[in-house]
Image (cartoon, rainbow, N blue to C red; front, side, top):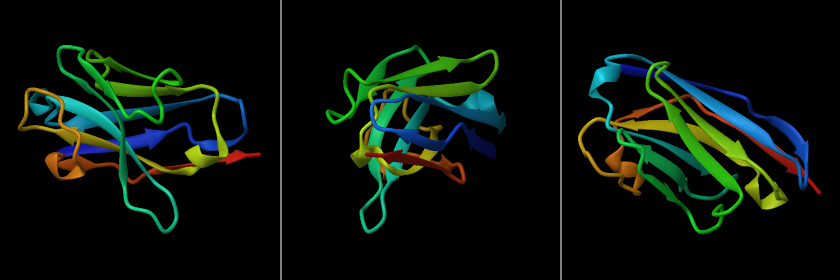
Length: 124
């Protein structure tokens, strides 16, 4: 089992920044990829970014150039630095872990464990 706990969400004005953190515990040695997803009210959960064990990164087109994902394997923590935030970034952000695929996968169905989510609200 892997447990994931997100933190760092909050309310920010458009153009501002936030950094999300996700701490993993349990069988962390089994994790290949850590990813971030988000879900806005009335919308499906969507991929934001992911980072593989070796450091390979993948981003959704909507966040490229604004968000940066990073990973500290020694601390079993993944971060999402979000800059130039827009109102359309408002959502609950979820951390997810993939223990089966050595390369980054985008679909949410490819992830095995999920955190409880943290709210990010961007005001205009």
